[in-house]
Length: 210
Image (cartoon, rainbow, N blue to C red; front, side, top):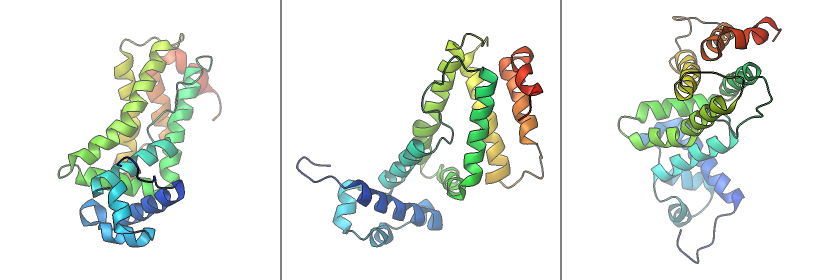
């Protein structure tokens, strides 16, 4: 935005982004039209283009909004190191899975990102940059700093943990193939904790009721 131009109000920004979300969800990235987004937002085309000059900027803004509002694959900050790591990691994983299940828009958005990643790689890169990378970085730091955790490579452990959950979501919710490779999510998470933390560190959690 150029110096001297008025910033959009939070309400107007939300209106534009909500209109953009609906247009992308209904028509995909390639089929979405800015004219329809402008009409849905009830603002001038000049206003939209001044703040969001193209579809990529709008789509990236939606990814950033998702990162701010949803703990999809992201930790907002490093949790207390006094908390039992097995308890925290399972709670975090269940939160991610519950979040995906409770918001169908997230799944549709993920399908658009995956489906358009070959033609529009920057969309996928924006998703990784704004949502997945912060989560990986913070979880890695958590594994490094927690005194009860001993893993040979915290970065690999963080990728294994989050990557397994992402793969579970993609198979079951994005590719609609949970019946082909069925897996109970508690079984998956409990075994994943054993792999990441070791059997002794996860034993107390696994023996307690959910």
